Length: 342
Image (cartoon, rainbow, N blue to C red; front, top):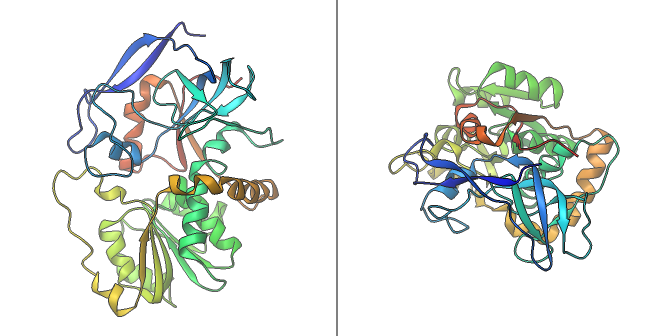
């Protein structure tokens, strides 16, 4: 148990890739919970592409992290002190945006209220940061609410071996679709096909992606769950069907750009195929999380949805670990283990 609270604070806004010196690790006093609050020892820290967006001052869906502030991030932890009704010492909670730090303050109210997690036999805590957390909810609502996949349709998933992509493909299979993944290595392609049940996977780093999609999607593409953008999105647009749905979850290929990025070169196909392109942010769906949690928990317990988590130890390694998201160095959900599980 620490007496101080290590925190990663934003020192300057990154230009291009996140570099040493963009954030600094400092020691701060251990926080003290007030009325209606709880002190949470963070166990797992979620690393996500949106961390890079929050570091910038670009227009975004939440205020940018201010210079000098603790880096924003989702956490899972254990309650060590509680002044909040309904929460006791030892409870496992999602405290909200706990941030890149050893300890955080959770509250039962506010924009990101703390959530007490149930104990599900055989389900590790890390799954609540993956399939049963915001990651799983992103896949669930993005695919089902916006993509509206129908049995027999073809669904393409970019970043298929990533945190969200791995869940999207399995939900699409549950709905009776042909699922084709896009990933950056042969090993990742083998993972999503052999272990997750995708029908096919294309290594986008090899060969002509437009032709490969045409080969693996002989009936065209009905739903694209887009995590990458750039050249990958262009190749997908070249193969879409009439009334296709393009669900824009992320554009990770562009987050470290140092200048303006071009729009899709095949944008005209959206008109010709009368396709729908729609972006979404998961925080808009927080009021419906109960619906998601019940269904996803059932799928997980039935073995219909699996997840892989890539866990790196040590809060001090958070910045270097984050780089894996942009180099393809991770498979599955990327987490930092800040402290030991209770």
